[in-house]
Image (cartoon, rainbow, N blue to C red; front, side, top):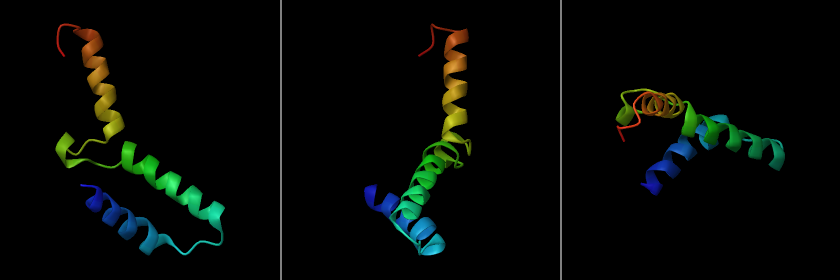
Length: 69
């Protein structure tokens, strides 16, 4: 699983958006990519809903019906 993530990272960020002028520019690019990957990308296991949206819906549903887990 980690190898798949590393491959995605290399393909989407390193190979398609580099090279960068300095470490700071590369660091900002990595932080933006991680934020996108963890929160905004469409995730097939979640019904092609971004993880942030899915989590928000989960907690909203849970608040409305605390008996469900």
